[in-house]
Length: 187
Image 1 (spheres, rainbow, N blue to C red):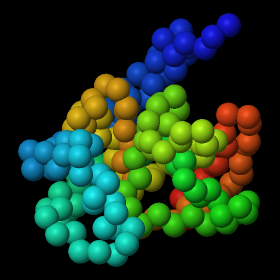
Image 2 (image 1 turned 180 degrees about the horizontal axis):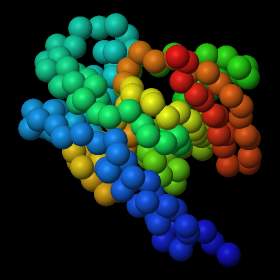
Image 3 (image 1 turned 90 degrees about the vertical axis):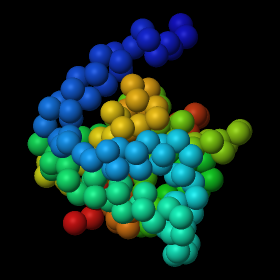
Image 4 (image 1 turned 90 degrees about the horizontal axis):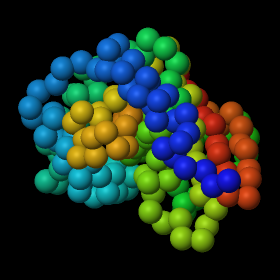
């Protein structure tokens, strides 16, 4: 039997989680913040995150950076634990050790839909992907569910994580199709 997304439990569960986030986490935003997030999800994520990772000046993206941070800061803390997923194809975020700390200087695009995790990184080719599973606790307030502001509204169900966070590696499951690394925020 071939797995088909539309036949799985995921669409219904993703819709339930999205509704919960919209009801309990998402706060109103300004048109300026909405536009910055829309552009981020469209075409400025790579150049902005490159600058963050390499400690370079933001240049023309300073305004968008600040607006996105303002939007995240305005959201309500999570009222329930949340699991989000991202991916990387070009490095192992664990550094090869369980219990290590992963520090990401840039924004992290994650999704409440594990099926879409692979879409957040395009360099998989023939590599086994590294899926990153973020376990976010009640009260977590360094990220925002940005679906209604995203260029990909209704598709990616993105939960955007703030830059300059540290994550504790809690374990890895490896299969023939890739690796899933679980991380929790370091307080």
